[in-house]
Image 1 (cartoon, rainbow, N blue to C red):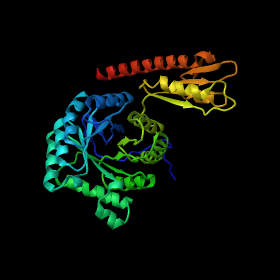
Image 2: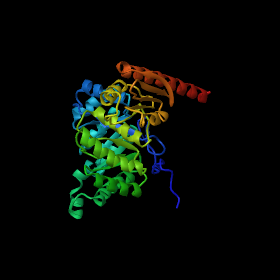
Image 3: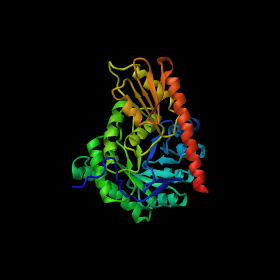
Image 4: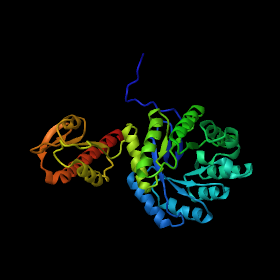
Length: 374
């Protein structure tokens, strides 16, 4: 029996679309997105939140457009954003048309909720005219009434049928620039529905465990649900839905992708949980390091281990490493012993080393890109 390499993830082959200039699907990197929670009519506050999401690494940001005042404000929001903006539309077809005219890169709709066939055609025409893609958003909490009557409750088959209905509407109108989500707050339901959908079509999939909960519980549910799908090769863009500040969704999204080797951004801190063997205060040290290194976007690894049981082994595999010792703490660079530190300057010293290493890696990357361009 042949066994695939244990680290390999074979991504499902999907067609590729674009959200603005960002490719989604195909061989493009899995994108990470979030959604603003400020009043869309407050352009300054919404742009401030978007800039925070941009700094955290967001590839795409969604903005709700529940009324005409919101779509009127969207034009200034799009103009002030560095990342493509998805307009979240529910029910009213005119909001979708206005959002497309305002410069939205993508419309999040359910074609079946827009109304008559003529209204759907108007929305699709606006999307085509203004270069918008779309996202069909199926949700277990808002399935069509007839499907609930047919199946008795939200279930994977009902969610798949809902998605296929919306797909047919767009395909019948010669529109194929769309991605699909099939979300549920129940991990088992969401994963099963996405598995069916992944087998039924080749459109890019937007992953999410909807209404997952607060920062801790929502992170766990999202990591289990989306992590299992991503490990199976399903998913082209993700949103971690948390009752927390939107920037936390971006951070957790990247951590999920980093843990699977699917995206690499920022410092991957490998640290021990601490025990009686620790030779420095591991927990507060790691907390301070994560805060101080949040601005680093260069992919690199840092191990912080309190004693020599696992410290040297972890340090050999990371860009930088710290191993606690009774008479001093050993610092490693590129797996090799470099110098010994004392307690007082641990964090400052490591931050300086990480920043220096990040600058070196960025310089090497730029040199390689310049050489390739020549």
